[in-house]
Image (cartoon, rainbow, N blue to C red; front, side, top):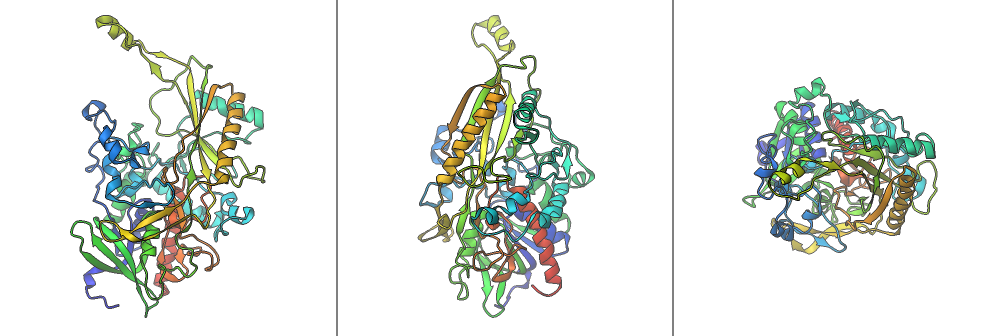
Length: 568
């Protein structure tokens, strides 16, 4: 491969500017590497490109509700809680980016600089060795090539920079981190915590305040980023002009730009990775300009593919060569297989008549959290693994709209509170299976001539058993706490609907059963790294983004050291 345009050569290329891609760019540029950051969508600059961030409800045409025609045009995107009138400009529209569903799969995407880091729920929990050892212990997937000790210092590294609020809870299944002051639990959430300790034993079914990427007390490193304290507006998905929550736009990308080592190129759809047969390594990427449809090649010594789990699979599958006929690095035949996700189907709600003298005050961009308590220390159910859950309790004011004139005004001003409403949603770990795949369609292509992705991912009996157990356990827990009018709901949400798709380019010890080694490096192509959700061997029950950040920082540190040694 002859590099004909030196101006298009860099030390490193990062594909994708979301949470992991932003971290890759930040770490690479800080270490002195001239880095090209490619984003398929438009540019979104912090503060200036958040058009609805400071609008009042009455300044939005439909007060935030989606018109019927928008919902009908976007049956997949409109299922997501954050797809609203004030945020829809950050979401991919269904008809513009088609894919094939062999089984129902709701693929939620945000194609712009920052990706879904503008839209995420900002929940950040560390994994423990119960999670990294899970596949080996429980006999599914393959053994992780790392353990908690390998990644713990990198969790600390990214937590300090991103800013994570939380409490030191001392739970073996959910290690403590580098926390800013926690948000407060409501009085009923505290009551639930106390009731669980009384009935099951202290810490047996822990209820904690959520750990979230919000600046409750900014530190000097956050002020250096230009970020400020979270204002508790709970308008996060519009983009935060204060930088109160972590996003690539507010944090890692501006930081990388200030080094002078970053070139950011939006509107750049990565077609494939270029593999040099003679050199035995990747030398660059092919990029289609989203506006002109012209293809350009960019070159670098190391490449980080962080396009989002499924798009990363697509790019590698589409990177065929004589050496890799079935996709870059795919000697094992595992590429695109063992896709997994989080199961959010289960919901349970109830009411609480106590504590009528209290109500909630202000807004809180966070809730309480129930860490996994099933099958943690031993196998105790007829299903593998377990689930975590969100938990919140609040009181909603009600007003009468009866009367006319003065009477109506009095009724509207005279708010009355009902009983406390409580609710939980599960986040279940799904088991990666070889038949859960994504692959390239042999005929259908997208607007850029790139093959469409075919999804063959679904729920199984293990997932159904887990949902049933969630209902049973939380009904018992709610009852012991004195909650009434308990109702369960299966939302029937499809795989993919909560953005936590993972796998397809999994890590592992054996090149015959995995794609990546313990450094997130392709076994068969040493200068290509994958640190987004595609690299995950299993899913655990924690929200995954914090782990992506830590894996990315760790992989960059290794890659740069290897590069300086002349090994890459």
